[in-house]
Length: 354
Image (cartoon, rainbow, N blue to C red):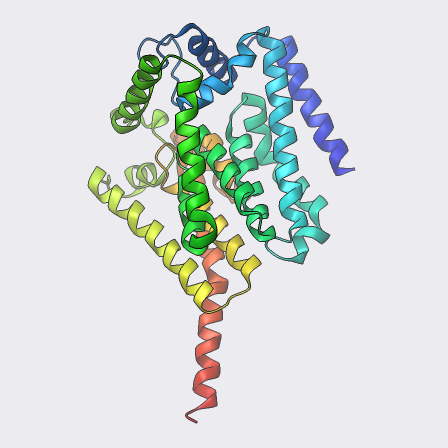
């Protein structure tokens, strides 16, 4: 029954794509154009008529779509995205993450996540593929399939750079198993484009990509065009955050999650729960503190709490409700860890000295 709902939603979206012109929110033409520019040896980041921000390898991977008509390629892209996403979610549920509820009640999970996924599917966003790779990585870690985990983590990083946060946290938890494998996969992924195009061309694209990542800043634009992260929340409701302050908060939050991962592993917390906590907190970091968080990025958190604040849209700021929902989700996620530690201390005090 749940799968039928997904099929109906996917067919409806594909039907809309087939019958209407691409809207400004449709990201697939950006991907297809990048594939065409890669084939032609044209600059991806300098003179492109589209605002392409992904890696050169992702552009190379999109070259098959450049050989297809726009509508056929766009529908194929969406079918691939939803297939990979559902496959990754299924794999994670079967791995029992965060607990046996995931495997026993997976139809409910698929139903709950559908509303958050539709926006990305409708707009052709790459977020579904990113999340599919991250879910597959979590499942692979729980199965002990370390090379598979490194490969799918690398795929996510090569689509959007911020999944590196989850990859590094998993490396902190499993350094011996993941460090060299992830490093090898990243090296291969970075080197692969040089085998697919001229060396001078690929070198220039990497230079331009890194320059774009360093210099892109929406803080000078109107609030409606800002990234939907903590900076926007503070800008609207409190005081603006300087770039340095925001970077410090990013690093401090990332370090706190890493310390929680190390602490939980040392204290032998249930591994499935610990991995699920770290994954969820990392998704919160990527949305609340990530380098390029847009509304569609919030598919990374499965929480409907943003709808509680729907009335705030009249202010013209759509990100504040989403950022607030992440803060609430973070509080909910860290609650079990805090209670677990408090309970351990209580038992220690009750036992008294030997």
